[in-house]
Length: 304
Image (cartoon, rainbow, N blue to C red):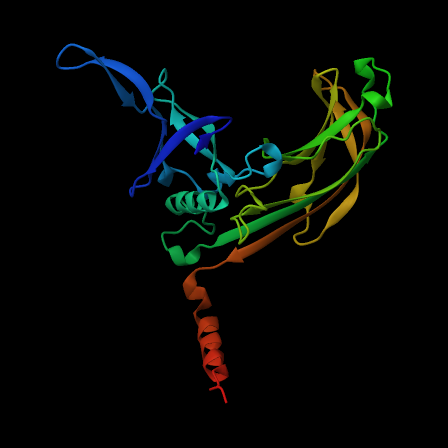
């Protein structure tokens, strides 16, 4: 297992839901019983995480566009700092496995120990709660009319405009497009799918947080070995009708350093759709289950 970007670690998951992440054995020197220097192996504890304190949405797959390791996930843990033992801070821990099977096994086990998100009125009766599966599909089409903001004082020169897009969900980078070089009208036509919880195909989809209010696309450009922000598009997710695809040209907005000056620096063609599936408790499906079982028994015809 790798602790990204590139540190080999060992993970131990106990049946009480405690996950320990240790650095691989390091060579150490110590004095033996005969007072002679001897060599031994030590494992350094890096993180200790109690998974039952996390919601399942805190364990997320990493989109392959963000890492050179295709089989990775992140744990948004709450850890105590050594200097402030009474304070907790949120820390993302990025891990990667060597194979798809290893990644799926670890990912599912960690999710099982985490706490599922339940919705409904405040009640001690679990039958009054429900779970919710959401998915966000996003296509980044192309850009047009791109130019630098006037405050930068730059003249637009097409050969210098190498651009790419970052997808931000709840303030975190969840995916990015390829870099299009030397053009003021970059064409991507790249699709991204974010779902919570993950469906059958774990690798081809990334997780969606349990609450989705803030989704934005940040257009960046590379110039003279500098990676800078050209502008941003904020999607109106709260006003989106469920299950309906939205596609149009969105204004690309550049905000000044003072947070006051706003300027349009181009447009982005975006298509997105937000879907939601409510899952009730098992008791709510009892009648449906009886009907399906009855119909199944009728269809069991002996072969001729």
